[in-house]
Image 1 (tube, rainbow, N blue to C red):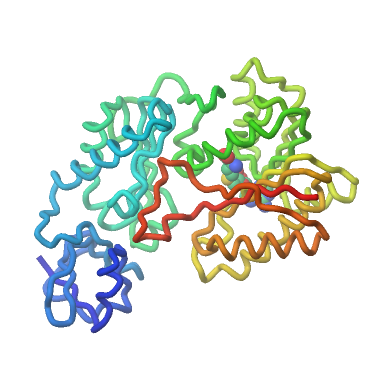
Image 2 (image 1 turned 135 degrees about the vertical axis):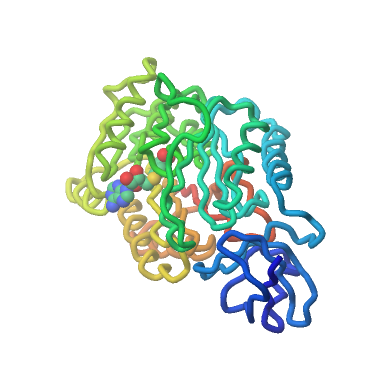
Length: 396
Ligand code: SAH
């Protein structure tokens, strides 16, 4: 096995059990290793510290599989890690019985570059790192054994694969194409999930708890759901008794899917829902100019800052939509606002939203801090795993 030898002092992050080794920390590679191969990480005096997956093209030159250098990284290792991740969800009562469930949350489950989401008896897997790519068959085998699922589909078409020198890969790894569309139930609402053409693995499971919270707040309210995708928040607002729900997204296929999802739920009143295909930044200005107001507004935009280097431009975009949100909010109304940008931390996000409230001339209070659901745990040693942060605000 090859060794990756660090510059003096660069072993410190490993002592804190952070799993990433950046190219700038590496002095040299001893021996020969190809993309995805397991290497031993050593400090500058040759002391072994961890076993990691080598990624020659990425700025993240290696990702740790184990801080125990005696661990053998083999097929059995991945089966074990996958089984442990699945067992962690089963041990958590609020997750038991969820038809849509994140089974593996990458670094936070000890499997850097591996995402796996279950939708009924189908599991969708996304491999985004050189190491995950190398161990595909072991990971897939582990998923099948741990869940007993009938089908596994690969959605390794995330842009981040390019940073690791990997081509996009999609397709069925186990089982047949399902005869019917895949549907899940979330807090009593039925949602179809397009695992082939939808975003990420098909659905935003991380917002599950927050959608229930929205339902609880919605009774009798005029709701505005910005960046609605396939209508997750919109349908929960209707289920919670909203007076009206206006949903905006720039993707017509997502809106078509949202309307189809509503049609799957016969008890919800379709007449109360309006789907609008538009750019949220423009549409909110139009709504403001038309003098519209709403009692409850959701802002759940896409990642404006995938990494810290995009933080400044992204901050302006967050400020802009939150400012417009406050301007459209009726007195006493609630704003549920999110950032899923890894490059924007909780504190910065709060600062941006505070600036927006101030510029809109509104006093607002944080009534709840919001985060991803329990099947998206965050390893304490890996704060980058906490990408989703939100605030529930009530404005005077
Ligand atoms: N809240 C959703 C997930 C939102 S994902 C849920 O709970 O399922 C972000 C969505 O924003 C995507 O559907 C994307 O099509 C849409 N989007 C991205 N940029 C946009 C823009 N400028 N205006 C309107 N929609 C946009």
